[in-house]
Length: 387
Image (cartoon, rainbow, N blue to C red; front, side, top):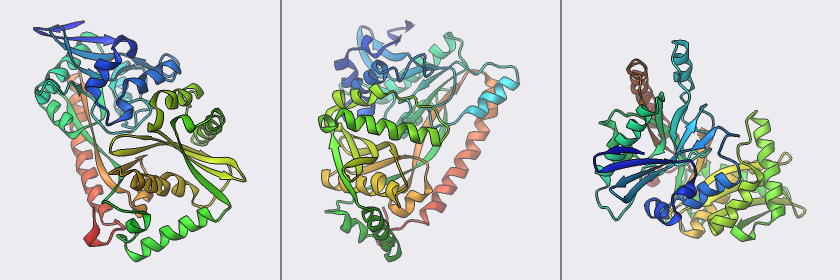
């Protein structure tokens, strides 16, 4: 336990040490990736822990005896599964004789999903102050544990700004999101696009759907053991093609639909009744979050249909305001997903390393903002319908 006058910070090796009601009161119900159940499934399935190098150290901030804020904190001996890359910092520091790992990471493991990371009890009413106090406490914990750094990835802009004056360095990135402008159906969305882009999407959908494929959406308890078995095959095949590591275990996916219910949305493509591809999404109160996908065989434009167009169809039907289709992919722009900024914050203990990283981040920020402006010129929307 770390004490600071009336404030104290405790670190927990399991989410079960923090009760679900207390955690979820702070996390809210908007983003399923921040729920107690999501982190519990990660733990129970062995997807986080010693095997993957994501060791839980969930942080809880107390005001006297009252728990007022929590954060998904992990101790890490590598930088994999984060989607905000600091490997070059680690190499430079270690070449200079420093020890970059282990480090602390405030994040949703294996998920480039934006949202709050300093989860504040909404009944407190002093969110800005608590963010600063929490940030100071986490930085002090990093100091006392003798670790090189602490990083908060895919946080909100407000959180980044609250910590910027407290020794945390801001960083930005780019993702591609689709925004619902109150469309009644997919065709109404297409009507907002330039003619050439509209025709290209119609052609892609026609080609994808003209291969004898059937598409269906399953939620929660509708997803059978067989459906998850096939999805896990697709997931592993995708990992193998990318020479990656399968962090998520088979048990994770069953646990996900068991604990999160209808917030789990599995989109399938079937050929002659058998699944040949699937895309996993989680649904928040306002947003559909696309996560993992995979397929068997070679089907024209199936990735675009299953991950982007089916997601838009679903979001319109459910009245959701946004689809976040994951990291990377300028090709998403032509399909209606526009560049959006993401935010992170970084505290580095060694002043020499911090001085080296800070100008890099300033230069990177300028380059990303310029890139965002340039990419906006590629928008498929007619000018009067630009989001």
